[in-house]
Amino acid sequence: MRTRLLPLLIVLMAGVLLALGIPLGVITAGVEQQKVVVDRIDDAARFASLAQFVTARPDADAGHKTPEEDERRATLRTELARYYGLYGIRAGVFYRDRSQMAAAPEDMPVPGDGEGARAFSEALAGRRSHDPHQIWPWDDDGRIPVASPVIRDGDVVAVVMTDSPTGQMRARILHGWLLIAAGECAAMLVAVGAAFRLTGWVLRPVRVLDAASHDIATGRMKSRVASTAGPPELRRLARSFNEMADHVEEVLEQQRAFVADASHQLRNPLSALLLRIELLALELPEGNEEIASVRTEGKRLARVLEDLLDLALAEHTAADLQLTDVAALAAERVDSWRPMADDKGVRLTYEGQPAVTGWADPVALSSALDAVVDNALKFTPAGRPVTVRVAPDGEQVRIIVADRGPGLTEDELARVGDRFWRSSRHQNVSGSGLGLSITRALLTAGGATIAYAPHPPNGLEVTVTLPRTAP
Image (tube, rainbow, N blue to C red):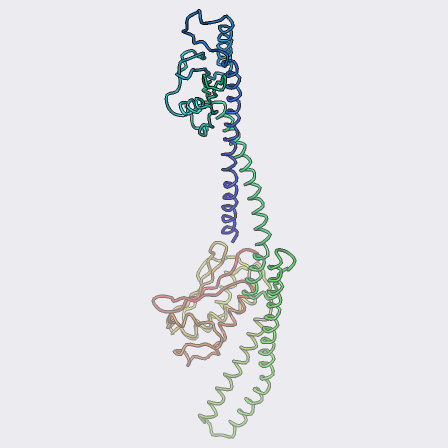
């Protein structure tokens, strides 16, 4: 769940940071350019104050010039040259007819189009030029033209033009953007760390709840969830889960107690009934079919009660898990069942490694293997084999019991192991239908599983899987 929740939170936080960072970057670029424009306007205004008293054109007759006017023009040219030499900014003063009054460098022309021409036209109209279009760090050839009118006696007599390179301004903009990006990255890292903490705080109770649910589903009914961590909603869910688990455990305990008590209480009356049937049989002729049928049904009922009591004990008893040599235990059970197999003419053999360890309750595993092997011997005809194989499989140990009996259909495989279920094709075989249910209860208590599959070309394959690592 964290892998699905974290990307969503990270994408949302990245969107918020981008929504804040992009406008901030645009504003930073605008502020830097505005500083340059204001500075150029101030410079242009200073040059305009020097040029407003220069009236004679440079190509006018010497008789029309005064020494004072020549001095003013020289001062203007000196200031423009010094300005250009110091800052590398081209600057010039031009008459209304675009002829040059003074400029640095001296060959600086009046722009004929673009931003410069627009700024010159606005200055001729007596207005200070508007801000030029925004220069971005990737505009290598971008320049900023600024024009200011030279006014004398209320009339525009000339225009001051400055044409600024933007290399330093673009460097400052890029530096500001790098600082913003660094801040965004730092904020993103902080946000990701906060998201990890937040998702951990929210999902930790969910993981604990999931683990407790798995424990209860696998038979560990004592598992509970601490209801002191996480959001209030999850704490309430944990309390509700604990109440539900208590109720389920109580109901199961009542069910087990009822089955055990009923089985135990019925054994004595049934034993007395079977004894009376035997006494009654003494009064009847030898070979009476009715008394034989009653005796068979009585014995079957006694076997069902015994199996019910075993099932109740298997579901109630906690497993005593130990590191067990599963291969040796399986081989021992095969040796114990071989006389019965030989009596039926079935070849019962053990295959696999001589020693494979796993975690199991030896008593419960022995009982489970007895039930599985007994079931295989019941349905395997004489002359056919039953094999028991033990093999390690990564972190698990598999015990595979394969027979060559009639097997089960797909529908029957889905139901095998249910209580009191028996295939309609095998109703004449002795049994109560509880053996595999008892086996599953014994294995589940120790963390093991049992599975059923066809054994081609015919037969049934039962696989018991045990963990190799400590629980």
